Image 1 (tube, helix red, strand yellow):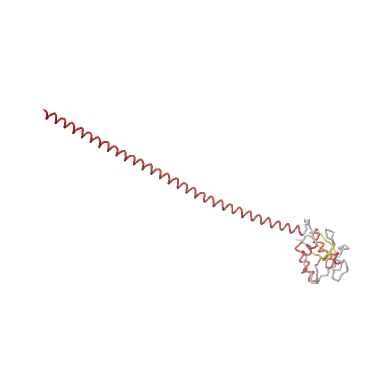
Image 2 (image 1 turned 120 degrees about the vertical axis):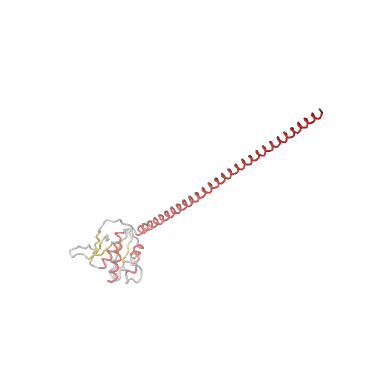
Length: 237
């Protein structure tokens, strides 16, 4: 979607309007960022340097045969730069397509449209937030970082959830083992208790049997003694 339109009747003024339109969208863009936004491949006539240069170093003479200082642009930081304003038909068409991605469209002015002395007119189509190239990169980088952090958070939550499930499963297994051991110990205790009762019962039975046996022996001996006494008394008579 177009954010602004650039009108002009002369090509070298229109390309200058395109650059100023970009600076309207990104007012604090530096010289390096401007050359990054408009790479040298866009202008096949360029033999050396960049499309934008420091005007203090070029003395306004990089306009490819045009009049000196014809391509001067003032940046927000006060630096004066110069733009190459001579473009072939093919390069010019490619430049217009190139800036569409930034929301800049080049339109032919109507006959009755008044063009300022700069040779171009920039029409804003909508309100937009201006930002520098660095700020835009930082915003994109922050977005990427936020997405990365969100991914790390989701992975961490997934890992914690997996650990929780694993721990819970292990806990259940451990509880089952403890319950099994307790049950086994209980059963073993019951068995030992029953064995002890049985042993005591047998011992008691044995004691009872021994008691009756000893009593029978005692009674038998006593009966034998009494019988002997009786027979001895009869014999004396």
